[in-house]
Image (cartoon, rainbow, N blue to C red):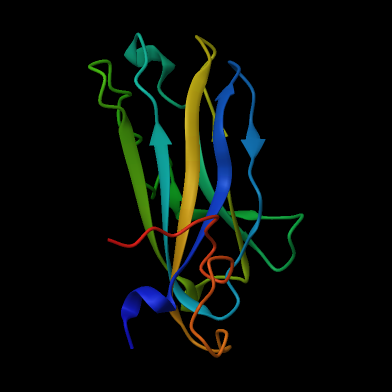
Length: 154
């Protein structure tokens, strides 16, 4: 099997500008049928590092509407990770969370809050890997089954 065929991509937060001092939780990610996920938070270049996100938290739950923060995936939390400074040089920043889904509940979501200083431009994507069950179409996986609007090969 080509390992790329055992992957699915999802957008949890489309690129958006989040106003200061607010919190948003993106779409719940259904991880049923996969053993691993890579979740990436892309932060745009900002004018000053003071617009660094106040929180980036990965949450898990048994249903799509509720989630509990996962300590290891809580930015600037006691047992979590350090949220990197927002880049001011035009390159942006990416926070990548590599998640063993065999230890997690079925649904994952990401909560993000900017500081009180200014708006934050960001997006969140997820790649589900190591498909454990369920067959693709007989002719191979479709774009929709891979979680893409369009796939370009070359």
